[in-house]
Amino acid sequence: MSDAVPNGGELQPPDATGAAAVDAERRQFMHRMLNLGLGLWAAGAVGTSAYVAGRYVWPQPEGGQTGGERSVSFPLAKLDQEPMVKLLVEGQPVGVVRVDGTVHALGLVCTHLGCLVGWSPEARQMVCPCHASRYDINGAVVQGPAPAPLKRYDVRVAGDTVVIS
Amino acid sequence: MGRWFGKLWPFKRERNPDSGEGLRNVLNIASLFTGVLYGELDERLDFRAALSKALRKPVPAHVNFWFCFGGIAFLIFLIQVVTGVALLLYYRPTVDQAYASVVHITNVVPFGWLTRGFHHWGANLIMVVVMIHALRVFMYGAYKPPRDFNWVVGSLLMFGLLIFGFSGYLLPWNSLSYWATVVGAEIPGAIPLIGDDLVYFIKGGDTVGQLALTRFFAFHVVLMPLAMMVLLLMHFLMIRRLGISGPL
Image 1: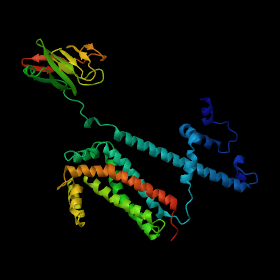
Image 2: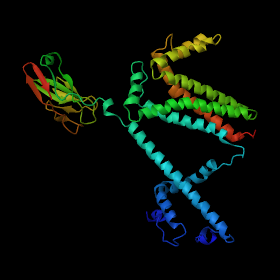
Image 3: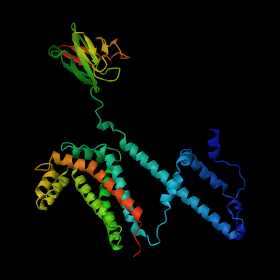
Image 4: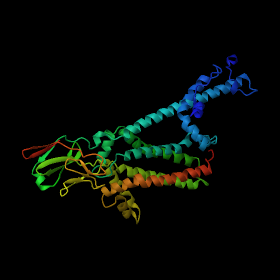
């Protein structure tokens, strides 16, 4: 075996014999292999754990309250009792109001920071309680800080039923 | 950029094809991923020295397999902490929803069955492991002075584990856990003088209901973990200070 010693000069103490050099190199090789094995095992364990933890932590759509109906209807007479009828259309809050005989449906989520706006019958405006943004009956911004108009929904009055979609 | 990249670049000029340079290159590629963070941080904080002090601490020659069970118990405790926090993300501690949330964890949440299984079996296994640990300490006479106070802390830890197990058993709120708690909560009633009041305190009322569930939940996820961490810290500091006991 001793004539098969590769030149491991840098590992070799000055007075080492060939056999000691082989031992030193073999030991170093084994150490590296052990470290490599441990490293691969640890990397695999970390990767697998991260995958499992990520899947576990990420919310499930089944558990949430997304979805909902695309089109919601209610009797027209309800608008006589309440100034604003609140509904959920596709899970989003929608307010329905009647001004001068015309029915309007607006998304209630303020485009500023996501508060729910309320209907002010006197001003005929949607007013955000958080930062006093104001929208007119078509959803357009009357007063800031809202950056964009409210979402508008289609309103269809069929007989004495209102359909919002 | 050039400075550290040059240091980490794995492909050095080949000096001798037989000297294991190729293997070193492979290892250097691996160190590319760890070296940026580890190397720079190590330069400032001496991780390597701290790690090797902890991991290469010499132990006496008589230390054998049976001395491992304390460490195994701590490992399981850490697993319980991690899986317990994970379960907390989905568990709902109310009479109406507790069972449904546990079913949801087991059947719907990805790897929820695994997380709950780890927590369940970890809770069982840790008792076995801790018993072996205590038996080893007893057989080696390691409870004797100067380590006698560590035995006391260890006994408190084991009692804490029992409270952990008892309080955690109620949380799924199924028939088995409910009636086990009804029966188990009666047992402290045998203690003279304070027994009846103790039972009343544990149950949060005359019957096992929402108050008992809330109470057990608070014990299981807040009070007991804090108490255990303090006791574990004492346990470890003392054994580090006093050293491992002698051979048989």
